[in-house]
Length: 130
Image (cartoon, rainbow, N blue to C red; front, side):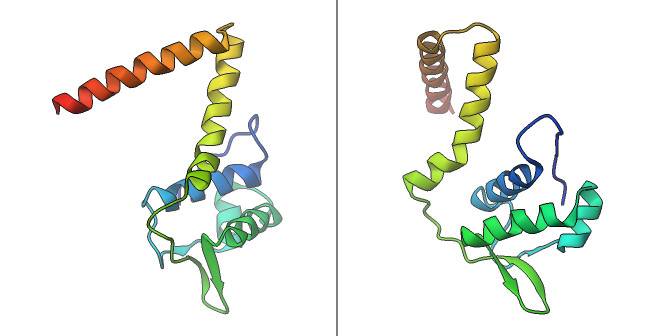
């Protein structure tokens, strides 16, 4: 399992949660796929096992993964259709990153919204051509 952990971003457990959540929702991981052990993932990421355990607890609380006694941790049966609220939760970190980046560049929110609208129109036009 390749996860990218950065020291300057959100807490490490949250980065693990976000990346595994994204992979489950996007279909990269399927129901029943086995996740690495807490200790194994902690060693590969060079983080404290408690950090991975916290991430797994949060994913288990979201019913995205399940622990099977003596067998390991697996991707849970995931509903095919995610609610709008769940999808908004998934995209929120990316929106935060975009807003922070725009602020660092001195781009006002109205200008950013205009650029998003223009990019959306361009992407939609490209989808129609294909």
